[in-house]
Length: 107
Image 1 (cartoon, helix red, strand yellow):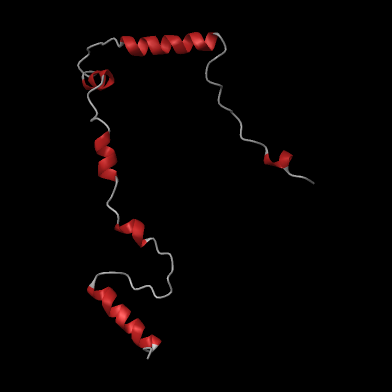
Image 2: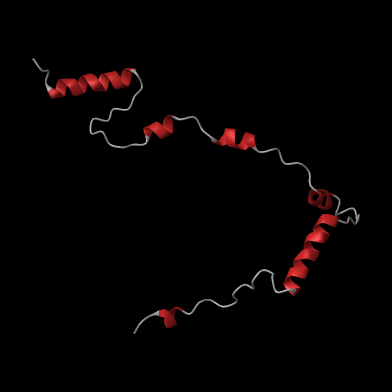
């Protein structure tokens, strides 16, 4: 003999409350499987090495004391960018005007 549906739903509701599950009789996709998983942020953050002090940080730290520092790597980078610009291989110029929306509309 089969039990009434309402009684089975009540039993399922009590079972979900006891075992800390979500009561979802309509079987909707709620994303609970994803929400139960461990957070991945700390594991991803631990993968990358910690940030060390860079030459730029030292320059900023001692700028107020009047020390002049020379960063050879930065100077080489700027020089290579300048050479690329002279050859026409540099970054394209930014557009200075907003696009005209009236011209693109059909009449």
